[in-house]
Length: 572
Ligand SMILES: [Zn+2]
Image (cartoon, rainbow, N blue to C red):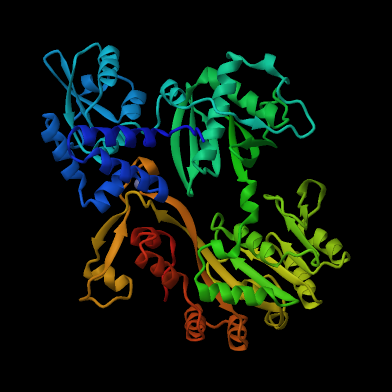
């Protein structure tokens, strides 16, 4: 197919060749391992380590013996300052090599495989010193490179990224030509930088890009798996150009820098359609920009893919089959409620169903669904839209959020009169939810009548499969997991490698608490019964708490105990 090889794939090939040359494996064994890697998608190194029973240390020791290069163990702080400056970070990253120290005129460089002549020459040329090579483990080198460069220098960062084809999708307008003369820096730099930011964010699955001016420079950060990561710092001169470019793309007034603006634009990249929502605000150092990335492919999300346990999935599906009533999702901002709502809609959507959503704002476009955005500027809130929607005879209505008495009361009316209502509330757990509706002023009687199911949720990060680390849980940890204190429990924890930007985690999964409403529970929840008692009752009736569901994910090695401690409320 002639696909481009990634840096990792190239490394694997060079690594394989070095092993053959060093006599660690035969050429035939390499062939077989490469074929297995192609077939299974596993890395060459894991195949050699797994199937041939070689540890990384074995491999490195063999390489060291066969090549005569000394093998060293790297520790943080081993890189001296003068050596560190010998060549740029981009080069360190490209070849996974680390300049360590000078010995006389020679620069000692650690690498994870014998470097070939071309690389040695290029390192010697750049540093101006002959190179003396030593061997060290790949992870050790990568860890030190990662630690040494939180936020890269701009030119290095830009140099690493190929200018890939990013298509700005023109929704009835010519954005490319507009406003170019306003750029204060060479237009090409700015255009390239913005392209790189967007393509990198898409590849990293970032949800947001933040461009924030400070004194003399501008800091660029991205949110990945819910966590902000510093990416690069950009000089002042480029900042204004970037902001102008983004404002032009978003059809915003580039001359007005004193007021906040909201806009959007659309891009197509490597088969993905991304909607970018731009929001600017004036700060003391100039305009800051936040971009939210909405991958339209995520609109097709399915309930089965969210991380729900099978029993909970079955309970949810059952509640969605009801012709009327209320299905509520709760949790703090950013816990994945909206995605769950979309998944529910996708689960019930058919051409025979009329489904209307009222959203603030509409994030993803759904087929067969009428989506109406809230518009506060013209007084079009949830309640007012909901009233008019009811006249259109829908089967299912999604109300983005219930924030006030008026919306709550129209929504309850709708659920009572033969509509299935889906909505979200800001409460901490499932049991709190009904009481919140009562506190908003809805009669307890009505609340009990309509609510069918309450789902509480959080998002936890999943351990990076490339580097997660096995360990034996101690007595205290076993107790947290509800395991016998004297047993033997194997768990996994985060480590960090270049595949996960040294965070130890990649991707997220929902953790749920699904609470079907029995008569007894409804009775308890709309009066002042303590939360603990309600929860005990729900558990007695078969509800699996969020904590218990999270513990299952820890036991399966999908996330860490540390992660769920941080995010999931405990029982009791
Ligand atoms: Zn990793």
